[in-house]
Image 1: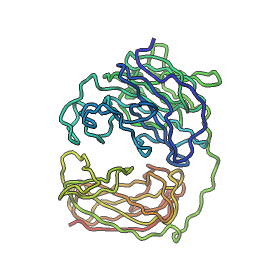
Image 2: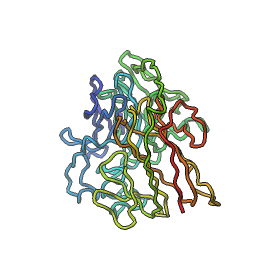
Image 3: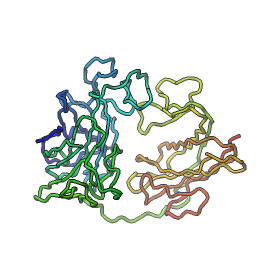
Image 4: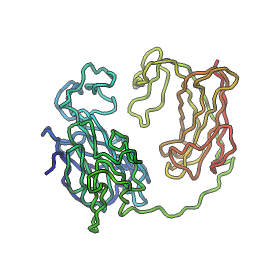
Length: 410
């Protein structure tokens, strides 16, 4: 017997072509309030994303409920450009991803993007004036465990069940929000904390224990993630059917090939806005004197002064976001007695960048008067999030300098 609800469809299908989307699985609402679904979007040769929402007649969207869309009760479809949880695919384009979300509003609105009710304990935002009724909150667990997976089992604070997977080994579990989101792990163990609301987790190295307690594969084998007493184990389920990437030759990039002129600007501001409908949410601008059309305010907490730095250049080389990325690093302010803030950050590009297209890096810091120095480099053998570049250290990660920069905050 299952006290939760989950998709009950199984299908085998090839990986999505780049730029296309499809609904990979659906599940009924646990309180009989319509259906939920997961859509997969292939956003690049080596990257795909998932988005969960409400479903009506095969369309994924947001319901006009709890303040969203003036409570009109209709489904408002989400654009194919909308996606929220992404990961690197295998060499055949299949995604392996595990996501848990707690306290999702029954309308399906997420991320403060729509005027809707507010989950109790969070600040009111975007025009919301009321808290969501507890009965209108859901805990949602979804992901893809590969095209060879045929069935998963789960246990979420007493909501247990089993069901066949959808396309790409997709699964979707929807239960009423609870204080605990999965079976507890060993006390003090390395898996402690996996029962909390967590962001998307790429499972390129295997599925970690959490809401999913076992996976059964097309060859008849089953990987179990719980002990005999129901607690989580200290291991992962391997990604059966994962296609590994072939070895590659790392290109040698010269200084001349990587060079580009940087255009750096900065401003100290109390209010920052970002351009709507763009992923990731850039460009960011100062909006002390009003919110321009097409922009929305950033929810930045106490609206204290912020140093907003923008670094722009034209990409001299293509960065695939699979092996090659652009990196940046900004050093702390010099010539000041400021004890907090002032740079000392590094980051990478997070989306594919074609040669000759504009690149924008933005950084927000606690403002500290002084002179800042920084560097942008091209990494032909890196990956998103590998912040190994240091502005004042010799290059040690195989990247090539695009250019250095400096600016002064007075």
